[in-house]
Image (cartoon, rainbow, N blue to C red; front, side):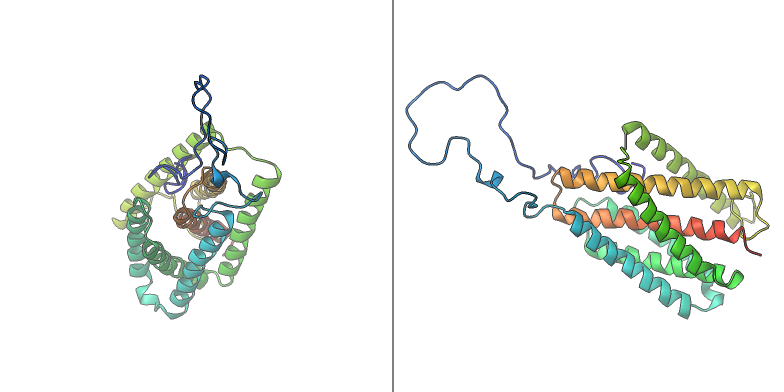
Length: 279
């Protein structure tokens, strides 16, 4: 699981058997018996008679995922705008730390549920919007105009990644998933240790802001952006797998949550990288 929410191949079906059609396996021929009455042929399954390309009722579809993702990102955006405009500067650091911790706890609690609570997804989006708004306000205060550039760069990067995934027919292999998982978990562990040390006033040089950042901080940010893009590719593949496996329609919220987490991470890292080229 590169993305801890939808990064594994069975992300949408591991909580229960996917409601796919059951096909009769071939085996020894059936013995002859009494003649069957007229009617539907033996073994006939009416559910298989569907119009071409028609999604079965109650299944996750691509349209569902797009709509749910747009809704979740919309809540993040609105919450971020409100925080950006209304939050006083003196409450910036408490809002950053508090929303970051609450968001992290919420996303793992919500994603671990068998049936994803929609209210929990929206609560996460609201809290994550506070984090994004506070984080953006801090960078905009230091480097006016940087937030707009970061937002545009984030969506251009995500769109380019999706286009490359579709048009170049990128295949996500188990080895690729494993590499992304190891890289993501390793980076997360390093950043968590760095965060704890920073609370005690220890500066490791891993996370800096502005043109004074050292090569180590730049390297960490470049790796983080590369891993975020790789996670997006894994997310797209996981959604396709879920749709192909006949995941329940409710699972489209899980897909939306996973993509939102990756998009927020990508934005934060791009914002930090852009600051390295600003005075």
